[in-house]
Length: 82
Image: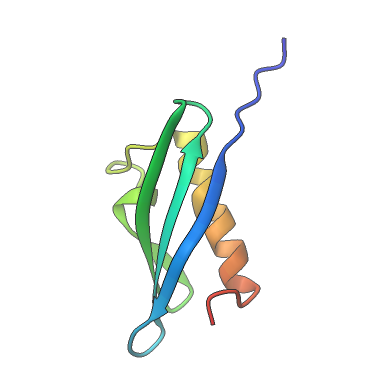
């Protein structure tokens, strides 16, 4: 059987503050753990930071954490948080 994890990410809000800093509030679903989540990621320059995507501090499964990080980086690169 194919073991596929469907992760969901929704951006609730974002706010630019100061020079090249942007806070992005998200909610979602971790398809591996079966848990809903919410949190915030801060972009400084083009790099994302925050416990939600930190390898040692995140409560998300590793596949969901990587999904959230990659998806937010992709959306940021498209200018969706301008």
